Image (cartoon, rainbow, N blue to C red; front, side, top):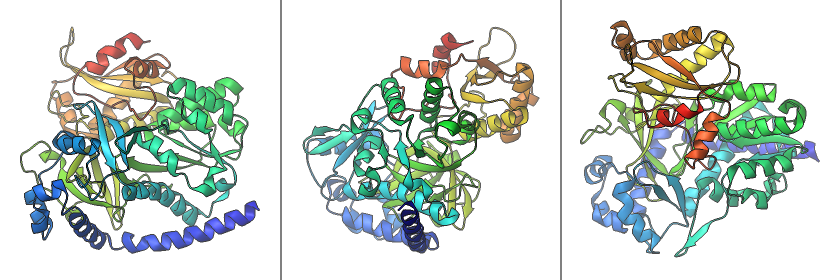
Length: 498
């Protein structure tokens, strides 16, 4: 029976991927089709009428009529949706509102329509199908699978269902996977993250786990609890574990830690889901880039990173982007988001097909001295430094120290080590050199004696989890910023120093 299921899965994956190549090989054509469809569908909505969608004939018209939007600019429309009104941002009304944390707006409520949710599901399905097709490995479908996610309990408001995107997604697990799915519904509904992980350990520790998915820091916490309970590495607990599926944050900084916990390397598929839409997935486990999904309910625009925050910045379409430049990604979606800034920076690393990496957040950077360091630079630097020294890092973040008690200012890196360096100063210098290679402005500041080399402040074991618990953001879909432009996080982390 298992052999038959695998054979059917391989055949279906081949058919699925062949169909995908229509949009992979003709991305601009599919983007133009989606642009026209989205404008037409929303022509008679409140937003469409306010922005004269009936007079839009091309992308230039759209860009002239619809300025870049953020959540605050859409709040009046979303408030109408929450009252149960229809035809506000998109035709009819959304089925769901996805709750997500905002830095300036508190909790945000992102509309999710039936059609946009279909593409969220297709994103994960596509990632698995491409993996099966490319590597011929579908054996994982015969074992147990788990996706660590938020509670599927949803609130109701005027005919709308409200919850975290990962909790909403739990309602869309295909029937053919339900029998293999863990944890139980009751456990999935537990709100307290630590209690929930303990129960997940109870339900999975003796199971034949073959696929495990979740945000990398959640996976770390789950694996650590499994090992603490059993005294065994994951490869002995789950000898048939074949695949990790990750999303939410970059997997690479967690790779060494997770492989150490597992006791082995296994195939990993990275995905790029957001409450606003499913943007990309890793279609080759041997390469860290993500295939941009251009036929999945989203029309994309891209703003050069150096123009973020300017009035009337350049808005590029897919055919106008360049390799190895950072852009703010802008989404227009079939959930009713229009020229919407989601706050992510991406970088194109291939144009045929279009493949990207997430290079940072538009609001997460360090530039207290004009250096404008972004997430991918610190993550790549950490990876280079740990590779050279065989040190494993559990978690880290950095902040500028502008007014030290003595000496020059510096970047302060708060790091939780799995295995502590024998020489911390030597490791700090390796990390600093890696940073200088990646950011010429930072290199100039060091060379010009404006900054001293970086300082490492070690954090105690589980210190970052304790910090996230302290601020009420442990678990759910909350992520620790890799870097900041102030000392708000740094000042709270001081109490967790070694």
